[in-house]
Length: 352
Image 1 (cartoon, rainbow, N blue to C red):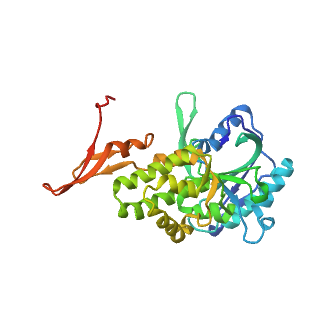
Image 2 (image 1 turned 135 degrees about the vertical axis):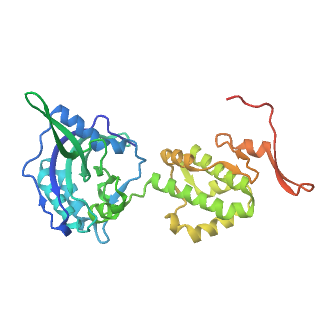
């Protein structure tokens, strides 16, 4: 969990990075940019707004040989070691970005590199480096007042309500490439920003494994439980799976299977499915890990707990009280109508 409320921009360098393929140039500033209180407030909101509502899926710097050969990792490490070196290392970062800006679709723009203080990550105070890029310019009107009229002037500038690209490198987990968050409003060139420039991969923490394992369970429910049982059992399996994650701090696969799979014949099916599909979800060798409550809450919102019938009737299951469906819903077959049915027991209709 991150908290950026009391974060301050302690130092800021701004450079302009053109498209190398189009012959546009790189302009690096010789001085950092001073900020008064008003500008600090505006830029802090511009830089950090997109990260406050972002689901926390961390990245980290990665290199096939050794992190010490990773350019961006080295620049970040130098800044954290000596914050006064921000300007010098920000120029190196801008040059590195310019070298990667060789595809015709990549837009030129300003790159803002700043040093943040008073950042909270997992309830611990640390510092961070912010790297942000503005690409899309918007037209706006300025007015010049004359003696008897107003002169209208059309100009272009950066919209401070929407950040185009950004990354925050938190000064934690240095030995494995730091924890990094990234946003990108222009998805068409995401590979350029994440892979070519930042050189990051997903940070495998409790959030990563919780999210991946629950997505794997969804696929298992659809591909195995539904064909073997029925729609109700598919929904109920995911119901039990999410609730198991919600009430435990640590995941243990054996305990999970015993609690969530009512049909013991499905346990070996689960293990076989994991052998076949585990690599796809990055959990092939994972059987225990700390559980992330944030990832569980996000997964719960995305899992459908509804049985849709071809008679245009929906039955909504309750994830909060998973025993209700087992106790009060029965499925059967009507010989006369030659149709399946669900029998629902209740005492009264709730008024909401």
